[in-house]
Length: 172
Length: 111
Ligand SMILES: [Zn+2]
Image (tube, rainbow over all chains, first blue to last red; front, side):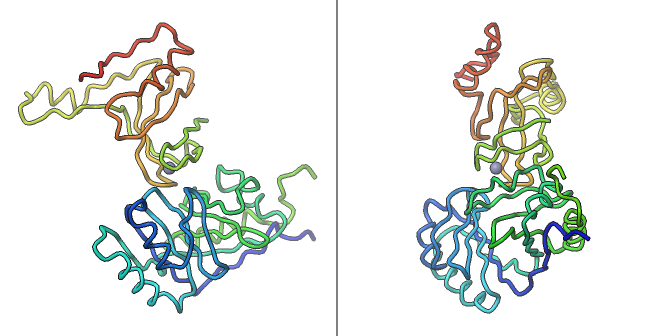
């Protein structure tokens, strides 16, 4: 029997902080407080452990090990004192999945109107996965998909269905 | 299939990633307006067969509202521009006139 298009693992224990601010004003302070470079539009920067994703012209998402969350939130609160900004712990609002395998892009192509094989190395794409919102970027050997925890079971089901063995998109 | 480029994030979004918001450049009738004007603001729409300006939201993306110029008949897209634009830009008008030389704006910059 053929292998699944990708191995899908639900990732637990990540901390996530949603940041909203005028990035032209507060960008440098955010970069310094998080220890990461400010990502360009539709991209994500990382140091291997933490990542900073561009979500909209006035929104970033910091993803980091859960144990570092409280400290990072405090550093951001301090760095953005006086700024009109939002620093919200959204860790529990998200479901995270890693798709690793040679045909992971095929599985995603069935769920989103996006060519993920063409996603830049540092690209972050917000789109829909079937009927639920998702943000997707590259990890070693595949892609990381985050969605809402409230639709996490649905997301797991459609991802696993899209990755069923023997369903690659290229001509066989 | 309709593909519109979001002017805020540059993503070429497919129709199912967007939420439609109806006609663009509606002007709200203020407190001094009469009932008929207010009814027009609420309900009267151009609904043309041809060049049209619309509001769209990049709902499954950056979340921003933007404006699009397209032909409702052929689905040709002339361009997209930011929502903070009081009327279609000169670039959009030029793009429309490239393929519709007789088309004329029905607004003036003074409005
Ligand atoms: Zn956008």
